[in-house]
Image (cartoon, rainbow, N blue to C red; front, side, top):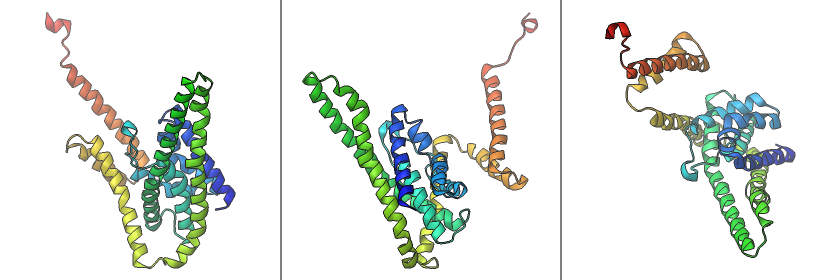
Length: 272
């Protein structure tokens, strides 16, 4: 990656933090999601398809990630705007097929590593914003009411630039340049690289398991989950088409459950 590409990706990552003022639904749960951000990353890198393919295993790993009470287990901005570019460059330098198992394993390993590192940026930004809040209250006690707009809009931008944008640019620039050295030091046929691919390929299963734990209320619900994959394999349809078919079954099940809960309908003639 060129320095210009690193700067653009750093600015985009910072913008997702600014969009957080609109709510986590816009920033964290939309623009920071790997499959959504992969479009922007792909445009910057000049390979949209490759970026999206790299983002798929990362999206699956964090598919059930939520932030209850502001608790962040992994920062999706770092996963998307640091993990995807670095995994893309690493896979491309190794000559891997972006849709292959090795590339998926590599992407999963990068996503898990960078997501944890990104939490430092997230909480660092929050801590810096607390300093602005403390300064704002002190100024209000002195009668400086103009400070309110600065604390709400201007100072958080400084936090994003210092804690999020600049570190993202540095990590991307240094990381992409170091991948060439990693390629020589870590040959593809080595046991440690195969271990990395294996562990990375298992991480999406963890994401699916977390999702199932949150949506499956009884064991019988797993039958519908398995049915979707069996349908895709037996009929040769894509998972997207299987999802659409599953949506129809879900709607029918909802209608039947609604009718059942309403009880039998008794007409006036039967009542007479």
